[in-house]
Amino acid sequence: MIELLLLFFILFFAYSFVVLVNLDVLYAGIYFFLFLYIIFVIIGYTYVPIVSEIIKAYFGAHVILPLLLFVFGSFISFFILTLLFYSKFKKNCSFDLIHVKFPFGRILFFSLVTAHTTFLFAYFFTHYQELNYSSLANEDYQSSGGVSFVLFVLCFKYLPPLLLLLYALKKKKVYTKNGPTKLNLVLLNFFFSFLLILFIGIANKVGNRTDILSFLIGLIIFEYSYFKEILSRSFPYLKYLFLVIIVGAFMNYLKETRTQHEILESIWYQKLLLQDYYAPGHILIASINFDYVQPLEVIKSNLSNMLFRLGVPYLQTNITEIFNPGVTTRSASYAYYIFTEGYMFMGYFGFLYNGIAVFLGVSLWRSISLSTNSSYNLFMLALVSERMATCVRSQTSFFIKDFYMIYIPFIFLYGLQTGLFPKVKIFK
Image 1 (cartoon, one colour):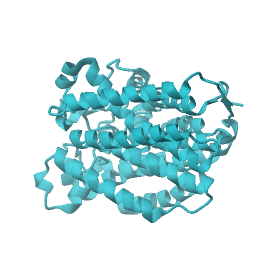
Image 2 (cartoon, rainbow, N blue to C red):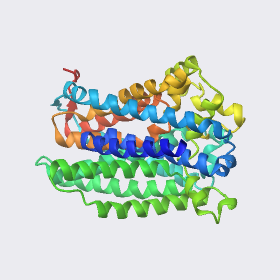
Image 3 (cartoon, rainbow, N blue to C red):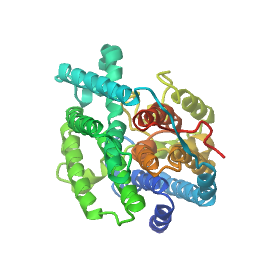
Image 4 (cartoon, helix red, strand yellow):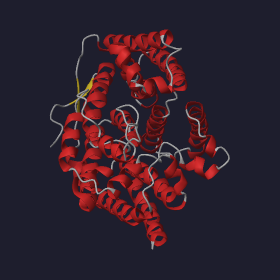
């Protein structure tokens, strides 16, 4: 029964993923990461339970069937809603850009980038010895760091979208007539190169893999759309596959330097399972096992975490305290699998919630890249795609929080460089 249902789930995903790729790359990309972050969990929990035992999240085989049925239903729900409403959504959300004469726009742009770069480099240089994966996850260290530490983390998190912005702006010269001036292009290239080196250096020091993956996804989506929509040529898959392999090897190196799992040293399939995508899905398994349905908690946590630093726990916190107390903080935890939210809100009927909530969240992000300007759309699509993997391991409040914390500021920065801003009223 389990094997047959699992086979049907995999076949359904393969078919529906191809359909979504032909429909919209953002929906398809998030759909792929939804699958990636649960399929290894299901396989590992079912056939290699020792890996789940290692992370103290194995609850018995009785939960496998309801888990698989709930996940399957959530995928069907999201897929059907996307097919039914995507075309109408895209048509109604199309908008124009207006050219705004912003005094000293490019000077202000480079002033902001310079301030960001200077602070990030200075903090990294002066705190180099104490910065590592453990210190960044330590709440005492975070508290002692004060405002400057918060700004450092924020500036680092802004690096992937900023690198994408600089890349898109310097690439703009290739496919538009009104590309950057020679001086502007020199500055764009300088900041892109310097910040890329700084990004790799910080990520290597603190063992950060998530943001490297985010930048890689955004870059590939930009290039994919550039080849497909601007050049009308086939995407050079082999070239970017080579890039993915190199970055993947570097990310594996970061994993080895920040953690120690000697017990898995010689068991390759267990090492394959015990990656960043393995733990989040166990929050869903725990929720099903303990029948953890708390709709008010879901509402409170989402409303609070749409805002900034209110201190209300994430949704994984209370459920984790039941089976592994004391391990979860706001910066270190099992993380979260977004489809867990549906179960916490509605129980087994939460597969309907999952389809609606995730479709609306993805559509909110997609709405900013549906203008009538192709170069603007290329950057905005890459910008929102950069968060594909991150949103899957978060709760739905991050669809809203990322919108105003990341996307609106970078719409403004893009406008400072190009003079192009969305009209205030973007819906027809």
